[in-house]
Length: 88
Image 1 (cartoon, rainbow, N blue to C red):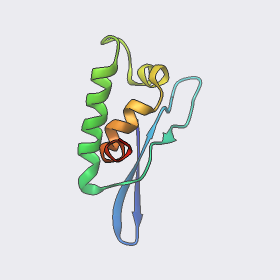
Image 2: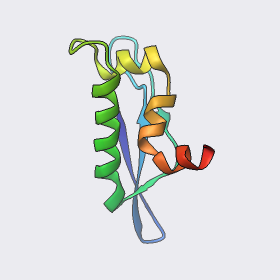
Image 3: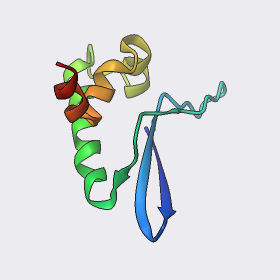
Image 4: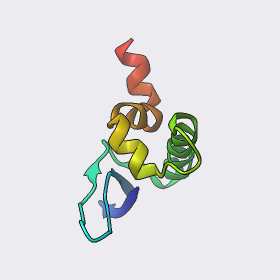
């Protein structure tokens, strides 16, 4: 999980990236979707972590392992629940 702070037009926003890996085989994470405002970023991360804790197979499964196993869908749905509701 990566967080990139952006300051545009006097507004603080945050871009969340998923799937990055800082080990000996580094990978840059992919943008999850639209940016979050200062007030939205913590609740978004809480939803993301709750989804991971629900979806993981065991306590030993890291976020990256779960992300690679499941793909982006459950994590994007957690980050952007309003998009999921509109798609239904």
